[in-house]
Image (cartoon, rainbow, N blue to C red; front, side, top):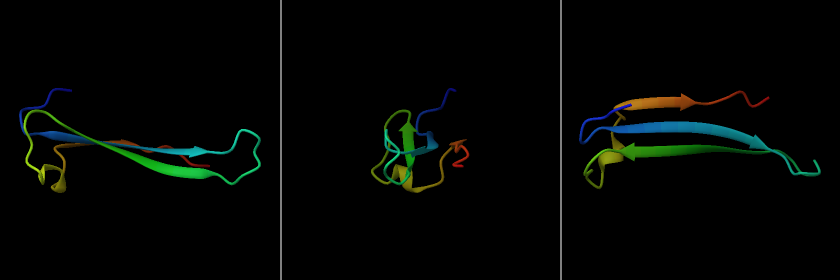
Length: 60
């Protein structure tokens, strides 16, 4: 996916894990990656992204 200078993409993925032995509760987290092309101001990621990629999966 090509972006013009100054544009940026936000990609989010969620995960669910348990301990290897299944002795502890589940752990959940959300990873967010903000990726820009070219120079970006310090507040560049505070606005809405040019493209949002939703990688959320079911957490059953």
